[in-house]
Length: 173
Image: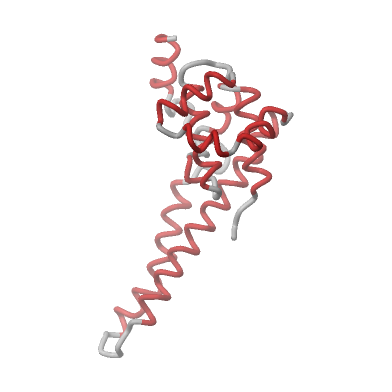
């Protein structure tokens, strides 16, 4: 289903181990929806919150961040996964490679979703529609995926992207 759970875990482990250094490498690619597993999405949100407070992650900081987000129950229910993440050793230079892979998988999942919607719309046709409206339904997912691809960042982004927010966070720290 266009997912790589091991890469997702590796990125979460890297965020836990390397903190802000790993986050800066992938923040232009990864967001919570990039993760296919809902628990991984929650962990990412908690790690992201913790990283906004400190360059390095600690277990108490992670729990505090989860509590602030109202997600501490999910962390409590997934203690074994947390232990796995805390014990993972991921090279910092591998994080961006894995993030790009997850970003491409997210694009694929989005494409599948859009194609399924189009297929559903095509199945509901009555035959009273114009040929151009039918073709429009068929072509729309392709255009939408192209739009996503044009917005995705394969090899990096603008040098100044999010720089102001990052500088403000450094000043406040």
